[in-house]
Length: 132
Image (cartoon, rainbow, N blue to C red; front, top):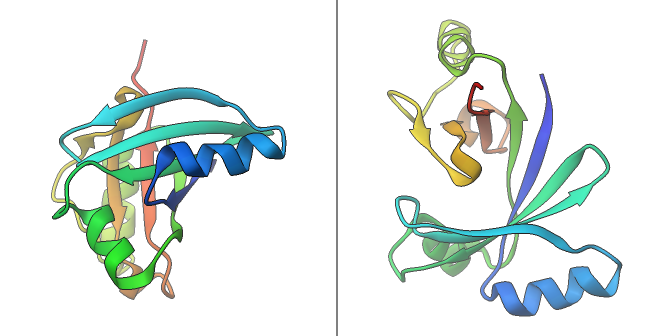
């Protein structure tokens, strides 16, 4: 397991990218993920990424997060080899896994989330890359 990315909620991807580009980071990829109601940009930092998340709709998860907490840290994603195993292990150890089954996220990855109430306030994402 390793850190895949850190998710950051932003109101405007264009505005946020200007800030990160000012410190030398460039987006490797941008993508709309309609099933999650977000537009994302991934910026490489060493072996991990920053994922900027802009809401596509006013009623999605990121829009609600921004309304409640404002811009900033949203989640940490951990790359896992087998998301089903990671979800089952988390459940067996008493963590509140939000998703019943993995769903498709940005970059074609399978993702599932662990509720912050069982992780000391941090939303965790398990991310499994497509198998080739």
